[in-house]
Image 1 (cartoon, rainbow, N blue to C red):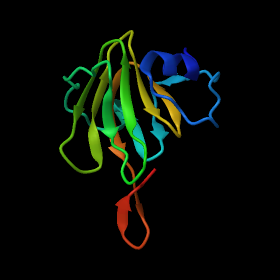
Image 2: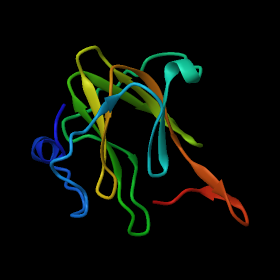
Image 3: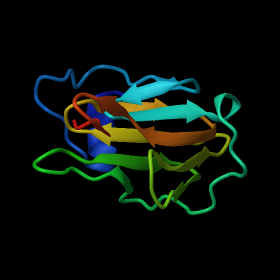
Image 4: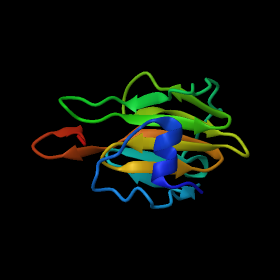
Length: 136
């Protein structure tokens, strides 16, 4: 497992100063949440197939920062694939191959480590006066 500082040096995505840069980033294969993004393992949701598109070295934005918000960036350490969904709450399908780790990076939330497996990545929504997307 790597520390936040190591991941910043490897991937170049800095985090806010209030986060502990010497903290070890855990790698999980279960349900995870990072701000307005949720990572759901395949056994919990029906996923038809594994993702096919390789995540490039610079990563893939699964949610772009809006109105001054920050981007949730998917990064790969090894063979990681991600296919974006066209619309809706489902952002895409993520497949992390054996021996690889995917990281979801966000300046305010730090890094989340994702173990080998297939996952659906979704955006969360909330209901206030109307149902709307959760904003980081």
